[in-house]
Image (cartoon, rainbow, N blue to C red; front, side, top):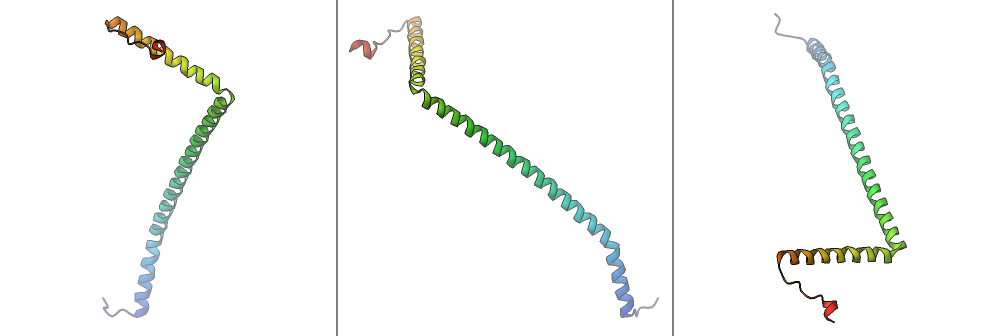
Length: 109
């Protein structure tokens, strides 16, 4: 075997080696590109989902604010009714447990 390879032969061998590696490099690049595209699609779906949730929350809050603005007295009286029901329940529990029910401040005045 001739140890003294010419520059031209070395160049040809290098080019042949590069040609052998090109398909593998192309396949790796293709796989990376496909993976990146898949990640982009997933990210886009997450962004859309987040935007939809934000939009739904905003619409719900806007609706709630409009309802409260339209009829604030009804909203306030409904809250007051719920509080009075809770007070009655507490009094019943106290009576059932045998505790003395404290006098209501409004009744004392």
